[in-house]
Length: 379
Image (tube, rainbow, N blue to C red; front, side, top):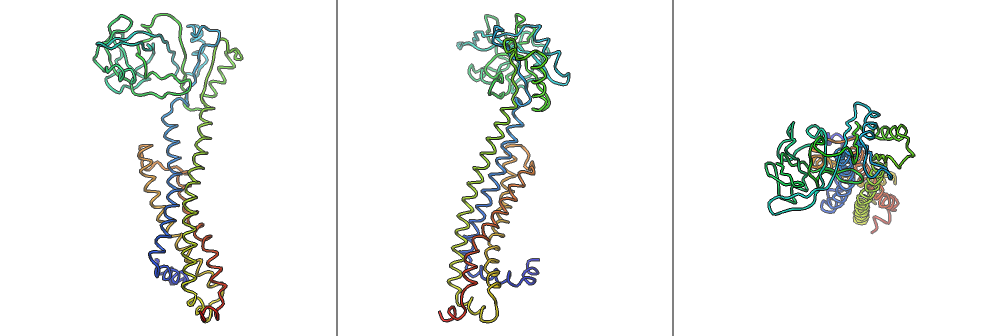
């Protein structure tokens, strides 16, 4: 296939032979293109995979939180919670949360922890160790941070508020950020055993960030918002938009880093081609003398630059795909989880590699094409 191309395009064959005459210099110039392409493509793929990994793991994007308003004594009443639940779509997951502070004692360790009254723990929470039983009135669940602090785990007994409890499970780490309530630093009990009818918040989990935003708008309208004294509703649409803007800025920065690598590669190719013109001045004079025109010399020199860029860009693109497989495996758990945006960055790196090589070869090609045959042969 390659031999057929060189036979069809003799100038390409000449370009290959000329580059082969200075293998080390050509290889170093090509290496610059490879590094530049890998920098642009792999950094772009990393940015896309990191963004997807964050959004997939960040369940708060689908969450709406309802808190007590400024004049609500920091609690929601049973009637307020029931009203919120009655307005929410039946497909959404809605649950209320109670909270208080209690003293935890285990062996010689003791301290104050948050105690959460939760509903539907088996369906909504994931244990890291142990299991969440269907009925656990005499047992508790422990957040990951609390388990580490007090060195406790499933089967251990703790004293909580003066009462003895056995630990059924330690929960997985949970996201923490903004107003989202992480349970890592607490102890969980069934909400039915939690005294009082006052709630600290209601969490609503929709199927998508868009649906969560629609739910938040609906609740503000139906519950008479503008009335921040009774309710406070938070959704994370703005946070996700800010995250997307920040990722776009980071991607531009990463592309800039890759662009600098390609700039260095372009200067290297410019140097290689200028040296080639100087060393082959007599050869260029002979070609002009036997009938090669300026345009032919221009095409020959540009062909050499393009060939350097093409081979370097192909190698760089292949390495970028390999790195992309590793990045996707680490961040997304699936090496083949490429998106169209990821392939776009690989294509962009390839195009920049070839383009930088051709642009860098313009001046040496122009200089070679304008050599006067008589002067070149005389030297």
